[in-house]
Amino acid sequence: MMTIPDTAPARVLIVGDVMLDRYWFGEVSRISPEAPVPVVKVERVEERPGGAANVARNVAALGARAMLLSVVGNDEAGRGLTRLLEAEGISCSLHEDAQLSTTVKLRVIGRQQQLLRIDFETWPAHEVLRAKLAEFESRLPECDVVILSDYGKGGLTHIADMIRSARAAGKPVLVDPKGEDYSRYAGATLLTPNRSELRQVVGRWASEEELAEKAQQLRARLALEALLVTRSEDGMTLFGASGSVHEPALAREVYDVSGAGDTVIATMAVMLACGLDLGSAMRLANRAAGIVVGKLGTATCTLAELQAG
Picture (tube, rainbow, N blue to C red):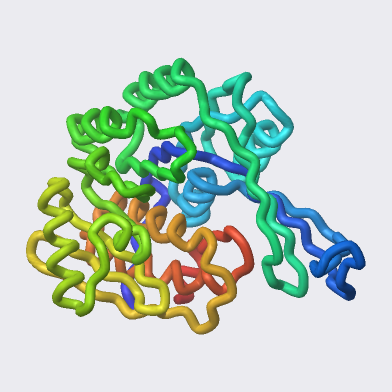
């Protein structure tokens, strides 16, 4: 069993796309007479921070100091998100864009299964993003590690500039990537794509050897220190300059994988901020992921849960 360091001094700056995850829980007892779809009688509504905000929650749950920088709309969802984050002790700087609707992901849950997801989203204005970049640079001295959480919603338009600034300030930069163009992540310390995200970028592989070859080529091309590929039921693999390290999946029961990537990158960042090496940080991130997939919806792994293993 690995010793878990004291996480209280660790300071993590999280930048990226935030959203409000809204859950409608209900009973399904009949099919609609209007169309062949289930009728859900909603009995409970729950709201949780999502996207980069869920990464910040995971950092805070591990006992570290989370600082979140993002953009929201001047709307009810944005205000709700701010309240939820402040209640969890997360230091927030959420720039308001009057033209923006805060991203909301509404999930309808019946019999503990997700039946439907509805997304509400728009892109932030260029001026708001430029102001966020200036604040990002001013916040760098206050943090030990930077997480850039890209959900493809436009909040990280200036990500290449952010990576350059953070690396120039001597801060490790961890990126949760999206899309097919990874060139904008060049120079980051670590990228954490999942299996399908990596496949979009490097193509399919037929063996472990071919995966390693493609991953190492990508790592070298982007001048990354390492590439961490999360592989669902196959665990996760860390590709670095000296080779690769694999950790098998630890989940006893997989209930919901949504948000597991947030837990992985948050745990990696906190442990690197505490002075652990990438391999040791990955072992703890793998343990945290195994805990969080046993929970429904976007969830966190607490420091106590990680210590209990």
